Image (cartoon, rainbow, N blue to C red; front, side, top):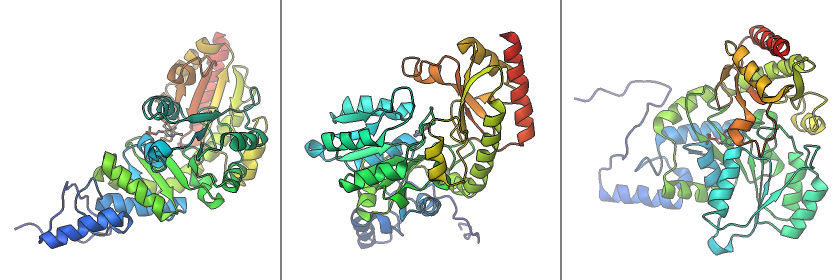
Length: 392
Ligand code: PLP
């Protein structure tokens, strides 16, 4: 005798590859509904097509984003691929315009998959050379000259933290009928909600702040248009890049604390950025909350006091040797772990992760600030900075 199902508010984990049907007719009905109306699945046939834990977590992430729907994928890159592929129309795919400052993995994907394998005409929009700032007049000219069929950007870029006027960018695209995809991983829905400004799709690496514990890899595509949702869900079904039920279950639990965690992380980051600034070992701190940041005004306007994010970029005087010294000296307080959004503060060396050619800053370290008690974090970092300054 199988045990009776127990009462619980949480959905148990359905690890089943396939689900049980009593009749051919019942199965045929569910298969037909999944193909026609994937968004209304209340009954499941096969976990690659749809799974109860994935569907439950999608509802929750849609609520966090303020979206009509969310589609979960196996990673942030899978979410980006799913979002873009929903707009790909074979030979009819027009030029796609990408901001140049994007996560390194996204740049690799554009070069090697979109251009290299799919032959898509991908045009790049560059910021002003020294100012680390995007000029929207130049964007307007580019939109008129290139006439792209899609626009893609990160409102807070990885790793330089350039903040762009997301509302203004989307408005320029919408005036011309161009669909917009926003990777909002760094800003998160707490700081800025692209869908409210007319973006068609928001993607996140849920590996980062939504999961928030460095223990799962996931991605999410969010939007309001049900036709795009259908295309995204069918694409996910065809290529099989869905999230596993176990990871969906954990993302469900962990994303419930996202708003609390991220608020605390932003507060810690703001204080740490100020503490780092002006230290003799430090050449420059990039943090959108600092008035010295080239796009501080954009950040203040867009985020309206909700915070400035939880990522900091520090350039050490003395280049690579000083960065090496810092990583060593701070290791009991900050670990070198190449991800972001973890509960505790972690860091990585930018040039060795994404290449010195793209980031010719040998002394640059990117810090993902956690929500550990602040005093401990600051004293550990200042002690390490003093050591670096002494060694120089
Ligand atoms: N987008 C941004 C801004 C990221 O920083 C990352 C990863 O660091 C990704 C997308 C890709 O996410 P994942 O590693 O979950 O595939």
